[in-house]
View (cartoon, rainbow, N blue to C red):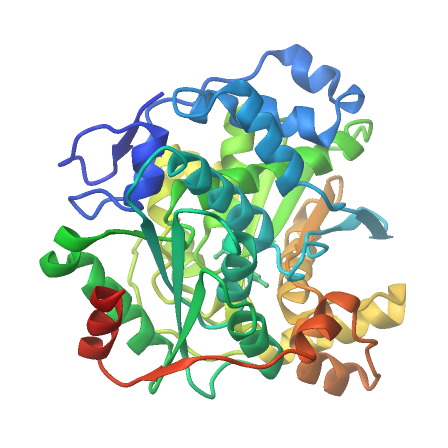
Length: 431
Ligand SMILES: *Cc1c(COP(=O)(O)O)cnc(C)c1O
C-alpha cells in the first residue's frame, strides 16, 4: 500500500516514508492509494475479537509494507493499554470516553502509535529524526509523553508562553530525556509559523530529518479509526442505525471514523460538531470553503479556522458534495450553548462533560431532532479536569485531581525561552 500526496505533484511513498516526511514535498497531505474493505465476517463477529485484534486487522493493510506483523502487534499492545468505555446517558445517547490514556487526552493513541512507529524505523539507522511540534495545549502533552525515551527520536515542542494552562505546561516541560520544551514569547500562531518555516528551511533540511507530529502525519491520524470500531463492537446488537458525533477542530478524528466506515463498518451518519470556528458547518451549507482566523473559545483544542484534514474528508468522497452531504452533517455552537449543555448533561444524567464533549453532545442532539430513530454516540475527547476552571465554574463543583495529573504537578518545569525563528534555528543546528 502506497501513500500519495493530495496535491498530486509528489511521488507515492511507503507508510514509513510518509511517517518520516510528515508532509509531501509538494506540501500535500499523504493519503492511502486505496482502502480495501474488511471481509463482512469481520464485522459480523467483531464481538469475539479483542481490541488488539480489531486494531491490527483495521490498520494492517496501511502499514504492512513497512512494519512486520509481530512488530505491529507489539506496538498495538503497548499503545492500547487503557480502556475506551461507552456509557449510555439517555435514550439513544451514549458517550465514548477517549480520555483514559496517560495524558488524559484522546490524542494519546495517535501520539503513542506514531512514536512507536518512528522508534521502529530509526532502530537500524544512524541518523536521528527530530519531531517538531507546535501546541496550543493538549497535543504537546500527548506527544511528549508518547515519545518519551524513544531511541533515535528527539522531540522539540513549541508552546506559547503564558497561554497554556498550568497542568498543560507541566505535562510538556517536566519530562526531560529526549523531550525539549521551547517557550515562545508569542501566541500559538507564532509557534505554528516557526514550525512551518523550519520545515521549509533548506539549511535545516540538509542537516537533519525533521518531521511533524500533528494529525497531518498519517501515523497520528489513522489509528484514531480504532475508537469507532471499539464502539461499534459494543453497539452492534442495537437494531437502530448508529451515528457518531465528533467534536472537531482539525477534523482528523472524524476523518479517521470515516475511514472505518470505508472499511465496511455499518454506520449511518457522522456529525461534525464545532464551536464558533465554523468553517466546515458553513461549507456544508454553502459549498464554499472559506478559511478564517481562529477565535478563542472554551473548547480551545478546536479553535481552528482552517481545518487541515478536511481535504482528506473531501477526498474520501471523491470531492462529490452530494455524496458527502449524505454521510456528514455539521453544526456549530457558542460557548453559552456549550455551558448550558454541560449543565443539562449534569442535571439529567449526573455526568460531567468537558466543553469539547459538550459540543459533541449538542451536535448529536441537533441531529436526533430529525432522526429520532437513530442511536447516537458522542465522543468525549478530554477528561473534564483538563479544563478545570471552566468545568468547576460552570457546574459549581470541585473535581478530584486524578493520579496522572497529580504526578506532574510535583515535578519541576524546565523550558528554554525563545523570541524569534533564528533562535529556534540555532537551537536545532547546535544539537
Ligand atoms: C485535538 C482535540 C479535538 C479535535 O480533534 P481533531 O481531530 O483536530 O478534529 C477535540 N477535543 C480535544 C480535547 C482535542 O484535544
